[in-house]
Length: 333
Ligand code: G3H
Ligand code: 13P
Ligand code: ZN
Image (cartoon, rainbow, N blue to C red; front, side, top):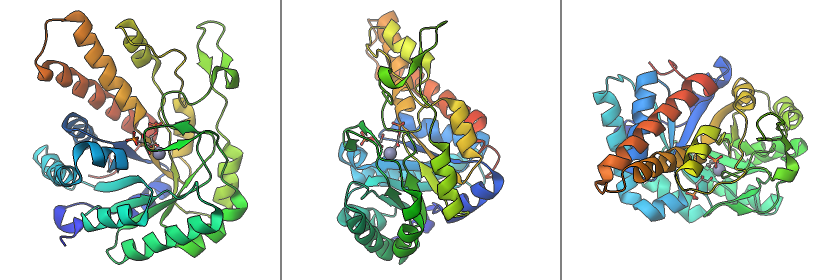
């Protein structure tokens, strides 16, 4: 077995320690294809931001696990070619749902894995997480666990209702599992519909939905219980209105899509939240750009002519997140 270290990848330990100390968060961007990966690496290299490349179970099934692993290796080399002398790139399994999947990723040179047993009863979550930690730590692979349940429905990640993380459980959970970071539930959720219109108010001027604030009181209570412990926020896309408008303008249909306002993510990034997961925003950017080309140039059939603009828009999005939301720019010179 080749170690992820031989590929130039890093685990999350040092990244997170520095981020908590420095009051910023590491971007965790999901990828499924070459254009997304190119955009992530270009944005990270240009801003010198540490970055986590996330692969979900669905992404592994879609793109093939062997190909994804070599793409990540290629990403490190590409970053160097772009002039990033010391790339800080982590390859992470997002929402691993079994010991076997996590083990397979460790064996396939991932530098970090998430075991998401949050839908199981508490003791079962602990037992499965501990088993993954014991295996992963043998190879210096870091482990993210989850406590509390996020609402939202995705291909592989689904739950109808959210249950905030209970602050009184976090010390026991972190101690008994030995996990390296903890994903919590404070009101974020997956996808482009994070809140129903009924949960929101409407801005009288624009008519747009204004979501309720995240439960920062729960985050504060968790940080009080686990001072300095790395906290992770899933479901942190902002669902930029400009992309939703573009999609709707060019034939799409995304009524009342709503995400997490960026000022709330900025606030979270300054706390012990040191990893912020973003996937849906990249999907929206990709779709918006492709729809625009299809609408304006119906005769176009060279995929480079529509995937190229999609890649450019995603790169712009990633840079914006790094510089204006997470504050991780310049942290990996
Ligand atoms: O948290 C879920 C990520 O957005 C990955 O979604 O399972 O559809 O690849 P996916
Ligand atoms: P979004 O759907 O908000 O982008 O969340 C992504 C995520 O949490 C991946 O694990
Ligand atoms: Zn997630």
